[in-house]
Amino acid sequence: MTPTKHIMSVLAQITSWIPDRIIENLARKHRIQPRSFSATSHVISMVYAHLPHALSLNDICSSRT
Image (cartoon, rainbow, N blue to C red):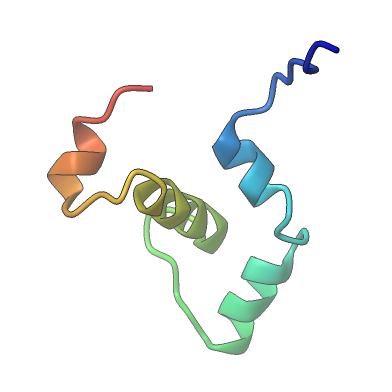
């Protein structure tokens, strides 16, 4: 039996579990004022930083995809 190959990355699989619009609704509820990017992109970038156990912004910027 051969495993099925998937195209989705681990990050895409994790973020697919987050219901649509919940992040924006929570941001609106708690009166978060986004500056240069949306609350959704902020949460996804924080998940991205958490996956490899990044300790600093330099770890995230120097990571390779």
